[in-house]
Image 1 (tube, rainbow, N blue to C red):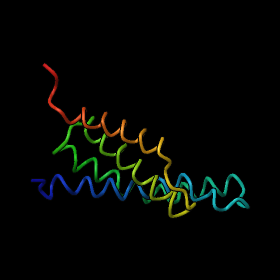
Image 2: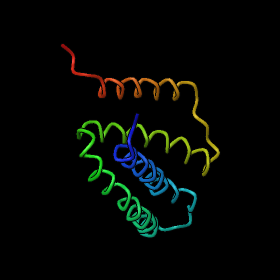
Image 3: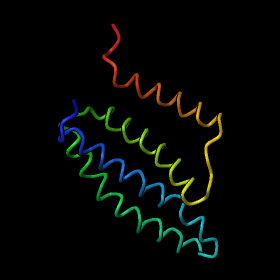
Image 4: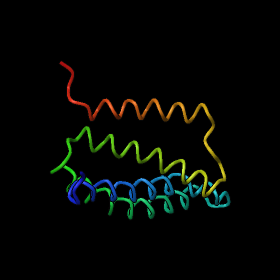
Length: 117
């Protein structure tokens, strides 16, 4: 069973992933923004993302290795991407994208397995 100490970093990384995906892509919904304004908007959102990511990693290092923390972040980032693409752009993943994400999830599974022989 996952305790709160090991669950909190995952929850914080989930929030971080959603905010970062919004920072990366939301400005595309505002094509009239100049490049500097789009960068400023993305940085402003990313500031709040860091307020989730930094504590997640500082708390998480007591429960996970660096490779595990990075793997959790990457898997959550893909999930957040799917949510943000759907919510902001109405895009749903194609079968080939789902299969690609499944292969990435398989790689993540390998990170959490005990080292091989």
